[in-house]
Amino acid sequence: MGLSRKNVLMLLQERTEKYADKVALGMKNQYGWREFTYRGIGLMSRKLAHYLMNELNVQKGDRLAILSESKPEYGACVFASVISGMITVPLDVKLTKYELKSILSDCEPTVIMVSRSHIEMAEFLKQEIPSIKEVILMDEPCFNIKEKSIYQLPDNYDDKWKVRSSKSTAFIIYTSGTTGMPKGVEISFVNMFSQLDDLKYALDMILPFKNINVLSILPMNHLFEMTVGFSTFLNFGCSVYYTPSLKPKDVLSIMREKRIQFMIVVPAFLKLLKTGIETELNNSPKYVQILFNMMFAAAKFIPSYRIKKLMFRKIHNKFGGRFIGCISGGAPLDVSVGEFFERIGIKVYQGYGLSEVSPVASVNVDRRGDIASVGRPLKSFEAKVDSETGELLLRGPAVMRGYHNQPEMTAEVIDSDGWLHTGDIAEIKNGGHIYITGRIKNMIVLSGGKKVFPEEVEAVLEKSPLFAEVCVLGISRTFGVKDGTEEIAAVIVPKKEMIEKYSDEELDKVIRAEVKQLSTHLTAYKRPVNIVVTKEPLPRTSTRKVKRKEVKQLVNA
Image (cartoon, rainbow, N blue to C red; front, top):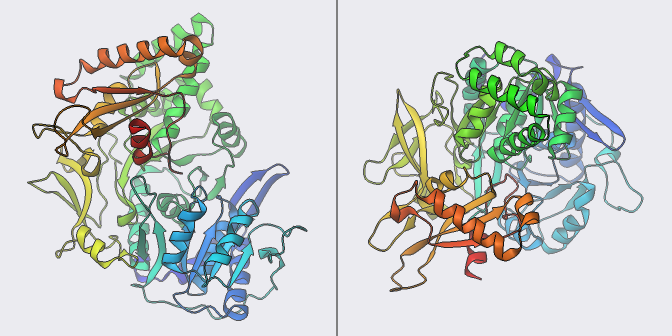
């Protein structure tokens, strides 16, 4: 029976039985590894579901919110929510109390599952949101925490599971809110199963074998991680491991210890790893640098990943020796970063999507294709480009039910023919490959009517070895008529060694000169006219997207 013919409860039961004693989820803490088998996660899920249904009397469609960093217990909470007929609402732990209050006022959860580190926030939210009946701790009980722990619930497992309509809502995922307040994206069980089907087909072409060890670095509240890193790989019978730290040395340590074979990442993390490798090389003896550069140049003409792995064996050993590659998504991938890892024998598959499509619409599984492409649409999707605006439109069974409590906003993005208007500017060429070239919402409109997409300017400026971070955006014109048009501003964060080397005045001059020099590669009207140098890291969401609204406030300050 194919996935599309099953319901999620059948699938959960099957996988729990099939992979019973295999590690499903694991995480390292200060005391060592905590690993949960498929059977163990299944029992914890059923125990929690029994408590929700019998002690709290939750009903179908009630909301269960989760306020926690990624950890094995998170998965048990998701499964328990499904078993008990609830809707899961994962929350971003980096949001302020006011943002969280706004979200929970919108979705009105009955229960909050919370980790120990966020218990005070959960207690505050319970006082503020009348719908919340109970806060349940996801960690071991603690003497100074009065809330009941998931580990203290009675051992009852035999309740009848609540089957829900395939068209009903499974998740409400609040968007990251880079430009404003988050919107609640409703994902149905149909959406989810369509994704599982599509991703199984894609990963069959990517992975040489199944039941692999996967490292999860993205937060579970992000739909990319929930759908791909969590649901898809558990469907394959993989072991998924979480890391409490994103420092390259900590990630690499776990990769070596658990012999990680695959990862789901965002481009910023790949860039961080690349920088780490280059820094280590720069600190190596001269002959090592020369040898690497010679091999790196030669690898361009070597198609075999096996040979490239042998050539760069020392680097691969740092990754644990079994690392195949990764899927990168959530933001555009810098082509130079992707090509770097491909050159040293690590496959990078760029994907594309958004929460509104549950969330993956394409993955570049064609290794002969251009790495700048995000691939062809997954098998259940249709894709086209609006001939007037250049906007990418998507249609298929994975397109969301709509925005929670926002029918007008839903109608703005899903037209009467079922096409989702993504807000992204794209081209479809080379046999159906999609190329994302800009974002409508980020588009800068200059005086005279010319339009500039900041991503294009950023791609040029990011080539500088002096810059750690770059953000390009449109701001109100400094001079001239206030007619709603903008001018191009570039916000630059210099690398640490630059900050240490120069005074503030010297640093500003050097950065401005670098921007001016690089801008010669751009058409004149696309060159930044306003340059801001800051030593502080750019504000980002939990998935490392730049919060352009906050950056714009910095420029206007």
